[in-house]
Image 1: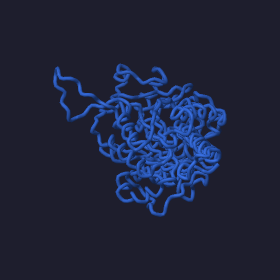
Image 2: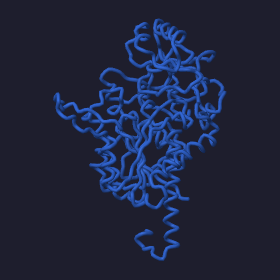
Image 3: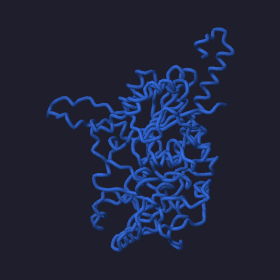
Length: 441
């Protein structure tokens, strides 16, 4: 079988790309507008340090830098159209903040309009299949900031952005469907619910029995097979994922990361004790980067220690508990050592370690997302203030990423679906007396 090729839009640091690569696909190029996230991507997929198995090809006409999708479409429409028949899968999920239930969910949030650019890219490249991953809120109707709803007036009909996406793709002859999936069922040590939309070009889809439902049946098969291949269960706990990164009993040394100010320390990685930890270390002979520990004040550490001693683990602290500890944040989860982690977000202080009075390191968060230890993160560790909406530091990169093991199963299912389509086409062209040159080209 030939190697199937993909392009990743809204690539972030590369979680989706890594998963598709693990599924046996070859990356052509990726588009990411944030310079820090793209530096991480390029380090892992285009540098001398990139593992050969995951290195992207990259076309000569595309500068290897941070690009926005609007800029790509404006400057390289002709080159994108030349990729028709070359790209098997167009992958990418627009930024999810505008769809998230945690935000204001305004219909005219400019981040929500990026899905239209995604559709334009699909139309230019005409891939065999596409993937779009987002938060569940994409399938729920938004409210508009510039519409005043009058009392006693009929409520306006609202459509979700998912509905609009389906309409837009239908017009360019793609059939799309979506399911809600939990990443923890795929060997990811994290309860992360995501909407996964998969589309296939209609002329190709009619060649396989079951249509788009067949693709999702293959995804369920890929999930089950992946767990067996990796030797994992559906519920990898937080301690199974990161106990070798605990600081208790570990030697500490100064953090020498060039992006970190002086005064921070790291703990040396301990011995791997679980199957998942050994998988994460595969190909990583050297100590992983992004192990820097937070510098908590004594009073903060004391408060965290009381929370770990007194509060339920694995669930978000309720309003009364947060007030009792003088906390203003609305989302704080003390991890449970024996359960998968909650959804890893872009904010480092959303999650407390299960046995140590501190927040997680970037590397621990990455482990809970199923990023292997050889994967390097670049840029600032964190940011604050107005820069939160403008920069994508390491914690944000990790929180925004598609878990690679999750993406691996999706990629496997799509690769198998495309192979079934190609086999059906080949059988038709060999056996049918009615086959035409056009039908078999």
